[in-house]
Length: 252
View 1 (spheres, one colour):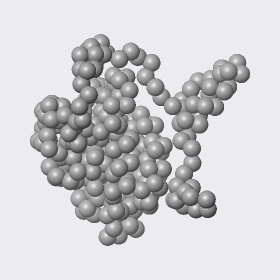
View 2 (view 1 turned 180 degrees about the horizontal axis):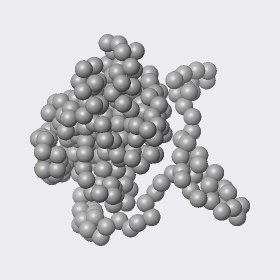
View 3 (view 1 turned 90 degrees about the vertical axis):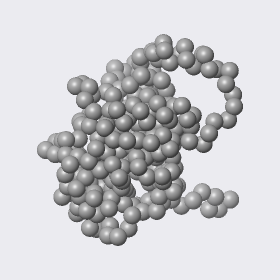
């Protein structure tokens, strides 16, 4: 049974948020007062419209198209085009079981290196390890709103050289809660060094001012967007992703 598990997977550590969740439950069972800032799960009920629609179609059992229901992809296309003023063709939209799964598939197929701001969501790095993609961290701070500056990205891009590169941006951000305000600066460096952007926008409908901003408005030709419903309407793990303009299907 020697060497049963691939070496890169042996480097994986337990999810930090799930560890915190387990520790919190243990302390609560011991009668301790705990303020939980680990694993997040919506306490709100699923909207009635979603519940009734799920009931209506509960008898459907046929296999779906690989990219997802055409009607759903068309609706998403129209919604995003209206919101962003950028044309998102239905053929460039793929419905996935969850954005976490979609990102994992991206790491599996991508041949290159990953640029990650710190702090970041706890699953980004482990997924890169599974995909055997080297991670380059960029430390952020309160002074730059917890997002990387153009200079920070350029420094790492020069270090990586001619290899393929993906920068993962999460705005609104988990865990800082901030929204990126230097998309223009970041996009200019990304274009200069041909860096692909994975824009994780799963929290985009949870801003206090209800505004929408995305780096795809500045760099649509090389931005993947991952988003979904699970965070703002508490509908569980159903998420979706799409790639504007290019017919490169990476389940994003």
